[in-house]
Amino acid sequence: METHDIVHQDPKSDEYNTLTRVVLLCLDEDTGENVFHWSVQNFINAQTDMVVLVHVRPSEHFTTPYGNQTDYLIKLAERHRDESHVLLKKFGAILTAKKIACKAISMHGDPQSEIVKKSQEVKADIVIVGSHGSGLIKRTLLGSVSQYCVNHCRCSVIVAKPSRPERSPTGSDSIE
Image (cartoon, rainbow, N blue to C red; front, side, top):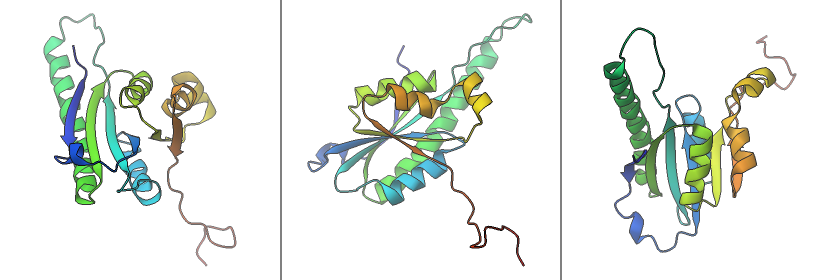
């Protein structure tokens, strides 16, 4: 069964002859906004980049001793798919409006392995992921998608950290 849906594709994306770099931009509900805006402002070049937006939604599989949950799991999967498509279409439309070539792909499964696999499939030159800013214990127990990508992607990986609030020149955050 195919686990990837192309959600958005610039209708002229096949006509771009000057594109020389593939940028895989990984979005999620928590860090997607920051990663997207950081990438557009600081990295993506409209003349040379094909941006592949990806979102990996969770796989719905768990067991319960209380009977068959198939209907619930199907509805949950559909809701996650729809939310993923909305997220990708939103950012795909922004890129298209800025005349940046793009494709948007919705996947489900383990984000770590799916991102690495997709980066190889699209022959990405760079992968840009977000950071949740998890602490050492949480990263150790749950794993870090960004750290996994840094260690396993064949191409370079940029980790876009969340924006920090501006600090006053005196180092104090208080208003006097």
